Amino acid sequence: MYFQFGPLAPDLNPRLNDSHLRVADGVLPSPDGYKPVGQWVQVFSALPAAAKGAATFISANGEAVIVAGTETNLYRGAAAAFTSIASGYVGSSEQRWRFAQFGTVAVATNAADVMQKIDLSTFAVTALGGSPPKFEFLAVVAKGFLVGTVMNGDVLTLAWSAAFNAEQWTPGTGQSDYQTLPTGGRINGMLSGEYGIILQRERLVRMDYIGGGNVFDFSEVSSNVGCVSPNSVAQWGNLGFFLSDEGFMQWDGGLTAIGREIIDAEFRTAYNVGDWESMSTAIDPVRGVVMWSMGDKIYCYDWTLQKWSTITYASPFIFAGVTTGISIDEQDPNVGALDDDVDGVGLASFDSAAFRGGDPRLYVFNASSALGALTGTPMAATFTMNDLEPMAGHRMDMRFVRPDIEATSGLTLTLGTKQRLGDSLVNTAYTSLRDSGEMPVRTSGRYTRPTLAVAAGSTWTHAKGLDLIGQKGAGR
Image 1: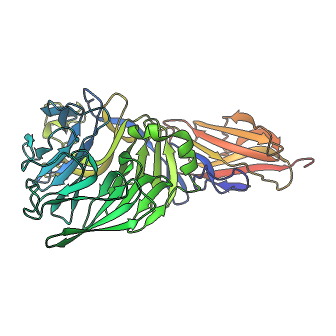
Image 2: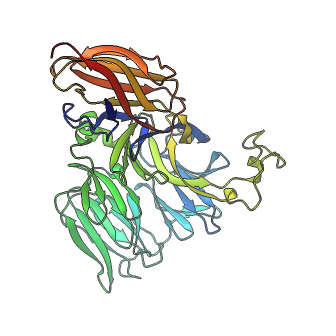
Image 3: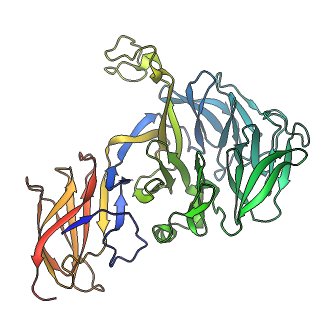
């Protein structure tokens, strides 16, 4: 009897939910199954301290650049290494650097120091002009306004620059002004765009440009759902994602609860408010997946397929970006990065776009503060199904299982069996895979909970399900 690897939904009752999984780890969803996630591969050398924020930007000449921050320094990532471009900051372990691109500069804030301006061509770092307030979060709204929230520690107040001038912050000048929100609780983030969405603790507020003396109009779009953690916010185009009291949410002009009765309960059991400080959130732009990293596990949601998975990997910080440009001296594949030989075999054309970079990529810091990407050979993967009853109302004597996956080695099948729903599972593991693609097993029980584990480095591209082969056993 064939059972497909359906959507991950550990919040569901394990009984009578044969089409769902309890565990789908080390994988990403595909339309009719799951695909592997690559192991972490280092791209840049380690920062000297823990990353407190990072982003990628595109300079005026089209070059992609990475900027990262620690508590005390800002760094530029280039040629597989980080170089300090500014130092002496007094940020805390709780505060993060937040960034926004405004024209040819990147603006950086950590809520403790004066906002910084990074020239994306020269990488000169100076204080942002116009004596701006200190902010926790930044967004660009209506194309021409730099908006900051939690102004000078006031958790209910936001302010915006003059139109098309991020260095003019005098209220009433060039349409610059500020606004205090009377209700809704702490501002925990903001979504950019033609209009802004302010994510308060207890509600969402839309910010529309209207011009004139008021400049912006503020209207409540959700009075009972808000954002509980500033570290849970990510945006891709018109889509926004965040964590609320009700669970994981998606904003696309309206609110959708994307984890309810699927994964929210498991997440709340595993992590509480004390863990939110370690959370980081990013979009994998290639796969169309939003990821919430909790430091030891990453929760993944594919918004097109509306399916979840997890990745067990210890990452203190993840962020969405693009590949950076590469120098001519990095092109000799026989010598490796940072060599001085421009005559190597396989040297890219001098006109190649590779020299500028710009391909979308999800970046992942490891526990040692080195920056990499999940692009290696497949990492270890695990699929656990619910309590199946292959022979409805009867015991099944199982003799073979055929995994629907291309891997020809590195498979471990664990069958947990029981006769009554209240019984504890009796687990037996099998690793032998015959040339026929079948794994010989010998179990008997009315209910079985299969787990298929795929070793790291195994070669496979798609996992779809399990075919359980056996016969009706004696008795019920």
